[in-house]
Amino acid sequence: MDPTRSTAPRSASWNSPGTPEVAEASPDPHRLDTARLALWLERETGVRAASLTAEKFSGGQSNPTYLLRVDELPRWVLRKKPPGVLLPSAHAVEREYRVMAALARSAVPVPRMVALCTDADVVGTPFFLMQWVDGRTFWDMRLPGVPLAERTAMYADMNRVIAALHALDPVALGLGDFGRQGGYFSRQIARWTAQYRATETERIEAMEQLIAWLPATLPPGLDQTCLVHGDFRIDNLIFHATEPRVLAVIDWELSTLGHPLADLAYHLMSWRLPPEDFRGLAGVDLAALGIPGEQAYLQAYLERNTTPALDPRAWEFAIAYNLFRVACIRQGVMKRALAGNASNAAALDAGRRARQTAEFAWQVACGVSS
Image 1 (cartoon, rainbow, N blue to C red):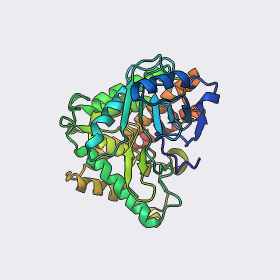
Image 2: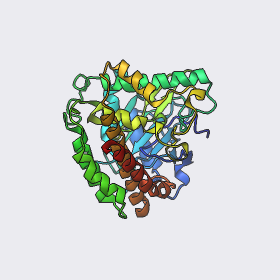
Image 3: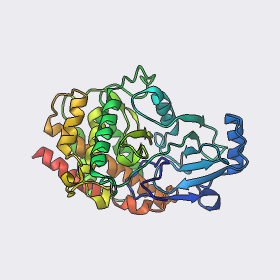
Image 4: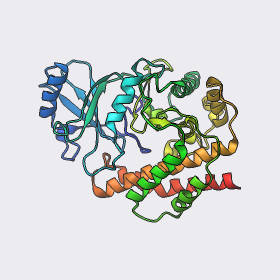
């Protein structure tokens, strides 16, 4: 399958794309019991699912995701928690389901939710079912093969969607209790530090420096609260098959109430990182490709949300924090890979990159402090 045409959701990770593999033929712990799942589908949806097939998408490290087919009916996507011992707040498929259901009639496009199952006996862990969205998913931010004018328009629409997300009123969506008000950066630094310690497999000096520096250098005035995606990047967007328009934002596992600057800086990290690592844009001739530079993209967002000009030091702090966060995620991937329950065969390689991500984060942090 062409990865630029694959439209099934991918899990939270910074890794290379994958293709579906037939779940029934796989001996791995992510294999689905399709007979039991078919019975659940018939009970929940009324669809006779004796011919059910499931394909697991190998891209992604966190929540295993499958494409379901029943005869000629519209396709579904199943997203479940991975097997094994999990951190208490990780792999929250229930939260993913809740937030996408709440966004169904908002300005932020999402797939249509079908059902949530919290009974682990059906497929081994809790899962939810959503409608397949037919469109394009891109892993390479350079959008190879896309005409220049369309590429520019796709970046503009991506900017529109994240600005629209941060403009939503969580209370009006029924998500007023989806997280805590204010203090987002300090809470998240503590949370990711704890998760890093829980998955630490070796000492990384840059991580030790960041763990001390981040809470001590937190800029003042970062108390705004909005709904944040937590993993807003181009391969978590499904674009229209022929138009430069976002049809759906997927992979809401890390969503919560938080600070828009944290969400935006995570999204814009790709402008700082090379194509060979985070599928980024560093060193790329952006003008030749019709892609806006970091500052132009940031300014377009600020104009959409009528946000005052940012303090450059606060912006660099947010970038350093998000690089730290990615290093923590990668360390978690490494721990799961060593334990044998990561959802992707390339997990070990992805986990090994935790060190280089932390070292780059510390370089950014040193620039803020200088």
